[in-house]
Amino acid sequence: QLQLQESGPGLVKPSETLSLTCIVSGGSVSSKNYYWGWIRQSPGKGLEWIGSTAYGGSVYYNPSLKSRVTISVDTSKNQFSLRLSSVTAADTAVYYCVPRRGECSGGTCHWYFEIWGRGTLVTVSS
Amino acid sequence: DIQMTQSPSSLSASVGDRVTITCRASQDIRNYLAWFQQKPGKAPKTLIYAASTLQSGVPSKFSGSGSGTDFTLTISSLQPEDFATYYCQHYRDYPITFGQGTRLEI
Image (cartoon, rainbow over all chains, first blue to last red; front, side, top):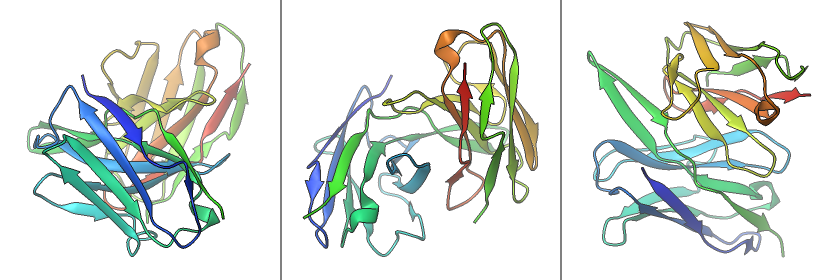
């Protein structure tokens, strides 16, 4: 069973870059059975998918954030990271690291969000 | 983008009741749909994927159905711990999007 732990600053200044890391235990970030990604939730609002990446493979970002987002995998530390540049107050949210697991049968694969990190609140403020 | 619309937005029920939440996609998503439960101050928890497959460890009181554009989540024999907000989410293509949530209240 995967376990996840987000880490990173809880306060970021406007126009700066938000950086978060998700440490993975109970599994390997080099596994081909997972995409590694992030979802955020603004206070009192709904859920917004940020993006997902596979080790050594494809990366997918939400078009609404694509110009500012980078998600990367670090196999040496068994972790993956989120960078969001040029932040504004609208980026204030709880950020969750959420792997997508692939379940394939009969040529069809379901890449679903298997487990969620506990989440970390990032506030954008000067 | 595919839009996901849940109904109702909020729902009042009593312990022991059976409730159904509906999720509609703006276009055909086959069965690429998941359901989540979120309690206040906690991370969401995955209940169902592939529209009807129960995630490991999720009790059988939760069930999902549907295909194409219309889906339902049914919770039987409500217990106090089931009162939470429920979200649907599609993963048919990118971007992945969520419904706005259904708040289940006592």
